[in-house]
Length: 455
Image (cartoon, helix red, strand yellow):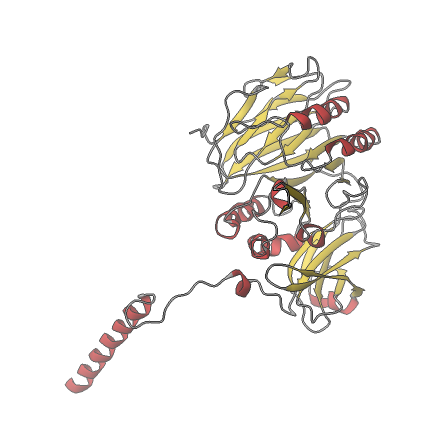
């Protein structure tokens, strides 16, 4: 018996020693630890990945989906059915054949497949999967826009850009925890840092994971979606990198040559307009005026990357402001959602009279009106941070540095409710806009949970 206990004790010591050796992570005689590179992590295979929902048409009756595979998948297939309480939906699926394009990145050649589901019923939950007929994704679920205007929310992000997989992922996932029934997620540009690097796009899709496949994405291009080519004379030429249009299927209702970046879509009682602040600003001016003139929605949000009113030190976008602000004023756009400055800032109601004057900033619970009544927001969701400025052209109600944020906006009849939360889910900024009978909006400041974060 004593011998048996001695052997058992020796075995336990051996196991413990083995555990220590295994935890040493390549110390001594253990295996050498190596970094897994982008080419290995994000190599396309026959299995679908980078699945993302967008819109090209009416959100009540259509839904677009795009995904990626290796080139051996010549034909992409999607199946869809009305969602049921159990698995019986698989007996009544409809099959779509995808439009497929080949794209050569810095890592590999891949096929991108896009299907536009049409003839859907408003306010209905659907399940879908994508693949090649043998290799399938899981079943994902989404819901079409209701037939009548109902309250809804959406999430707005500033730049993700850097350390997307490791540090931005917690922001998008916290936003999903906060607003799991959001109608869409809106990204105000600079989703990644180097647009030609396929691995960075792989990180963006990995960070968003299943969320991109269940909640539609709206995105406007930032300067980091623009590829840079050095010319013979030493200058640089910028153009939209090919990853962007092949991954995101957006409405084709913008000016010629800007179809992937300048467009609008209506959801509920909101018109969302995307502009391209990187190039050809003047060509978008007349189009913007027309789209806003024809707008029959109660609320209007315009998004583009570069801010009308910069929130970071030593930055200004004067040409953009002089071209577009008069149109935003003319049509009393409710809110403008920007990025680029890697800090947070939010104005009060910015008016048109006197150009940059007539800005009202009020205390919590108080209200104010203005001749135009547009609120301008600049936000950041990734970890890259800049110094905020103090010499603003307009009064800034809320400002933050070194703070990752996401924003949830709710449209409910004649109210627009806005809440900005930190990575911890705590309220950093909040306000409500209310429509008035004949004039501009009323703004009511909300309660916050986090004091101002400044350097």
